[in-house]
Length: 335
Image (tube, rainbow, N blue to C red; front, side, top):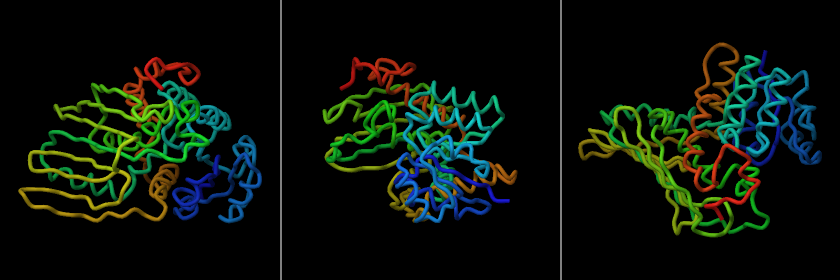
């Protein structure tokens, strides 16, 4: 029997990235969608041939024909919706970042652990063939010495109204939360949990109140060094991981699909690794396989919590704390 999915928040990310993947993965079926606008929910369902649509989250969650719920709303609502899903004794697949801060993640994990329910998080890059190839190539570097990531983007120009990703109450921070989390999660996946994390955030562009610049460093077991820089008010775009080992280096983009470049003994090898049409589909397949007892998902609540902890460590000073409802007050080092 196919695993029957319901989606909470069938917005833009569900049009191509995720939605069709629920229908195309083996042993998977998309049976219901929900959006607060009934017209938009109905339109999505009609265009994607989904049998049922709702404008109320609880109605979808309590639909007896929905086996697992994909929470595709902004992070500010993840905990509340996850609480309702857990109360209905159903597994959940939650968009990244898992929540606004690590404490909300811990509460989500507690709710699902109490019911002995699986909790998955949409760090889908862990399942993409592109990064499986990176993992395959990394051992050729020999002993890893250091790894870094640089991400710069020109400033956003359409800020009226302010996108939800730049409202801390909805997102938990700025674009570092929304995009940087993917890079940090991949580093956790490819090398291991980040340790001894230090960092600072700032707002150099002054276009909004949340952070737009982050510099950070950390270590891994074995003395491996790590560093990353994120700037969302830069003059040019850049997106690059660099892994350096005793035999050479490997560079790859996180968001772009440019070739992976392996440099060994002064020789350079370029590897094309395009993404599938629906980037969530490999992760969806991994989740379906785990629930069917034939595989396992590489992204769980536990692994996603580690990334939220790192995000909090870096943003702690900017927001004057991350373990409370920081979005409700003035930030001593923000704005």
